[in-house]
Length: 113
Length: 109
Image (tube, rainbow over all chains, first blue to last red; front, side, top):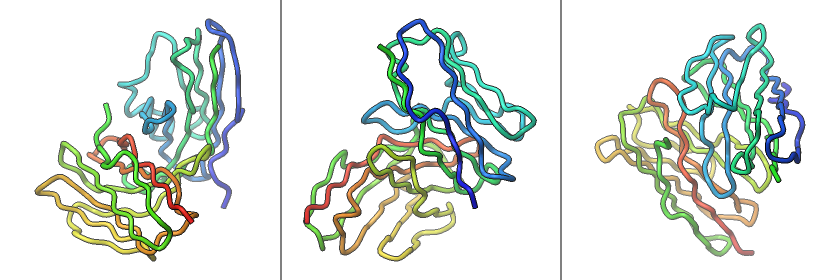
């Protein structure tokens, strides 16, 4: 079974530029998560989708971050404009539903300079 | 905000020794999960324990849950150098999974 796919793996941008990350969850998984993990910290939930609807985006900085899940499958996370403090790993994860094990992708490493 | 808090923040042991990590949380939960993260990689699920369970085993892993104290522990027996990683607890309180800051385990050969 293919795992959660993410791209790009690494991205370096200048502050005030924009960036987009893509995620393809495990086939059939209804729930999709985006987490932000700053170096030395645990993952922080940014947004959770159930199919193509948003369940929780309370910690998403909506003035600069946006996310969508097209047709309840793939998802994109966008940052515009980026700030230095956005440097982190952006982890996409999926699960069959909201009460099961979460499966993580390898992450997209963002450095904002 | 993060739900779980792991303790200690860092742990260094010799190969063959046991490693114990603790997790405390604040609100009632449906289940608690432990994950491992190798440097530069994504998180890998280790074990899930439901709120009505007190102990669970998986290979060299033993997890306990005390809902009255809102705490859990992860024991890794006979540790190996390959167990070197960060370990996170994650709590499911009904809406989403919240992670702690993790315990960084180093196992010296």
